[in-house]
Amino acid sequence: MAQPSPAAAAIIRAQGQRPPSRGTRRLCGQAVPERRMPQLSLSWLGLGPVATSPWLLLLLVGASWLLARVLAWTYAFYGTCSRLRCFLQPPTRSWFWGHLGLLRLEGPEGADPSPEEELKPACTSQDMKVTPTEEGLRDVTQLVATYPQGFKFWLGPILPGITLCHPDIIRPVLNASATIALKDNVFSRFMKPWLGEGLLLSGGDKWSRHRRMLTPAFHFNILKPYVKIFNDSVNIMHAKWQRLASEGSARLDMFEHISLMTLDSLQKCIFSFDSNCQEKPSEYIATILQLSALIEKRSQNILLYVDFLYYLTCDGQRFRKACRLVHDFTDAVIQERRRTLPNQDVDDFLKAKAKTKTLDFIDVLLLSKDEDGKQLSDEDIRAEADTFMFGGHDTTASGLSWVLYNLARHPEYQERCRQEVRELLRDREPTEIEW
Image 1: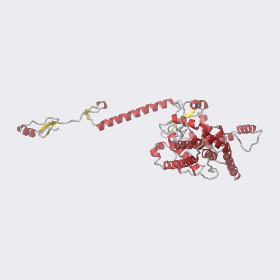
Image 2: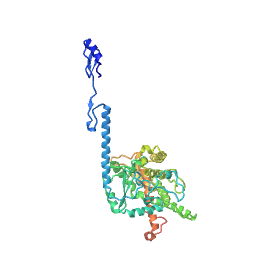
Image 3: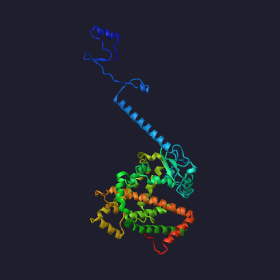
Image 4: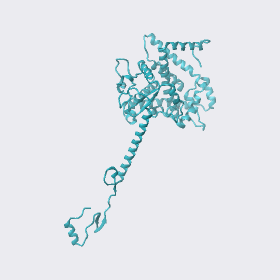
């Protein structure tokens, strides 16, 4: 508190009063001690004493926590980079993008890129420009020949990944327990709004419970009738190829046709629904393919890894709309099947369905129970059905396309496979292959 001037002090003394001392104030003629803000010494930061307050303390605590998190992340990141130094890596696009954008979709030579393609980062490294074409497959083959054990790649500046190529390197990872070989938590987050907590994305006790409950779906007696469905779908695809060849088509997109064939088969096996998607457009099938493409496109732009930013974009809104359409289709099938589900014994129902060869994946999920007699919820059933539609068609189509591609490049092995099939069918000439 400011001291009174000499004149004011003289007047006060003349009146018989003592001037207020420093740190006091006069209230109703009485000198009252003045409260002073406690001082906080910040000499360890090179600062003098400052007045403390709850907000200042909160700010210091927050800054200390943030600093500790940054230091911990930096230490962990340095440790990860040190452990990955043994892996070589192809040339990166840039220090920021890493290897993002080196795998992109391209149309025929000379064709204008689609709006989706224009948004993909361009590749400036000619050593690692991989496209989903025959030329791209050659590039992948060359990449594996250059890095036979495996190689490191970067998704942006701070997110590394490993691609393993040699079977001896892959085997320990596949044989490792779930506690050691953890599931991916980056790309799985992109798929979770679509696939939910199915076998692909779930873990721990939930994964174990669902795996046990889904075991009956893979019993031989249930899978055998599916072979006829596979044959019918493949025959449709062969008929399309013969028609295209008779019309003079010299080239076709193998993966596109095989993807439609696998989706056609899965839709019949999971939902008992025939969309005839190989012959005419199907909104549900087109949406499945769109969701796969949107996830792949998002993975190529690290700025869209943040959910809040992604759902502000047009692609994010399309992704949400596509998820709603797929979920509505699956939910409608589940609800309709629940209404028609009989109250008879489960074993009798399964035997009756097996005889008529109409048992599908939804039937098995609706009738499955765990050790406590609890059934799967509608949300769990939808997650498993959507998971098998995605995982079943994409991996199968990729594997079949890769096999056919290599058989076409190596006629001698193609002939050996043909002879093996002929020997197996030597004593019989069925109209179609059976279990």
